[in-house]
Amino acid sequence: MYSEQQNLLYVALGKEKSTCKGKKVYKSLVFKVFFDALSSAYPLFYAIVKREEFENIVREFMSYGAKSIEMWKMPNEFRKFVKKYKKFRSIAFTDDLLWFEWVEVELMMKNYMLFKPEKFSYKNSYRLSKSAILKKLKYRVFEEGNFEKKETCYLLAYYDFGLYKVFYREISLVMYLFLRELDKKGLKKAINLIAKESAQETKDVKSFFKESLQELVELKILNTN
Image 1 (cartoon, rainbow, N blue to C red):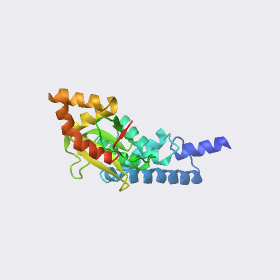
Image 2 (cartoon, rainbow, N blue to C red; image 1 turned 180 degrees about the vertical axis):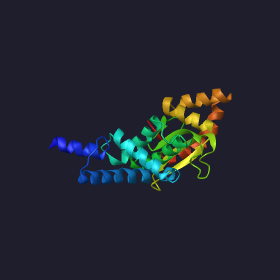
Image 3 (cartoon, rainbow, N blue to C red; image 1 turned 30 degrees about the horizontal axis):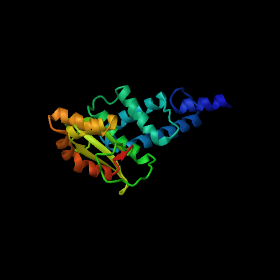
Image 4 (cartoon, rainbow, N blue to C red; image 1 turned 135 degrees about the vertical axis):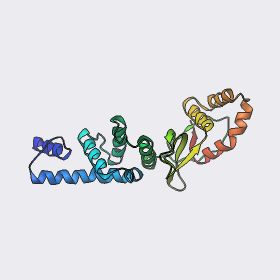
């Protein structure tokens, strides 16, 4: 019984061939599940690629094997598969666009602990909350019509607890470096880094960032340790 179930699974995933009509139908149904899930998770990307190429790479991915038992995580495994094995290389912005579309799913599906944000203070210690992600991109995939524009840019993706949506905000290199350092080493080290890089006094750096940091705390993008 187990060997028959295993054979059915291998046929469905394209790891084994079969002339059995029932198994072929099952294989088609499993493919449809994968195809629908991935084309829905990456609608912008799917609108760009050729359907036949997308179908072929979905089949390759099925044979490669998804590991997660949670269906919603499978598109991320597909994204990593595409990057690792250099699929869709004719589209230069593939990796950036797949990340851009995936991160919305990731942030929407996380379990968040609700907390009331306090007023920002330099006396507190902060980190990026798990409702936010920083990303350095090579292409402007967050601007429809500019996907092919090669330009280093920095994005802050975050879940809005009031609107129950994911938003993306382009940020400056200075803000990106500041938030990355803050998340790794804390607020004080982040201030010192920017002061050093800009040859400014720490008090001036604090004054420069204060309003922005207050907003990030209010949006729950930053929280206290």
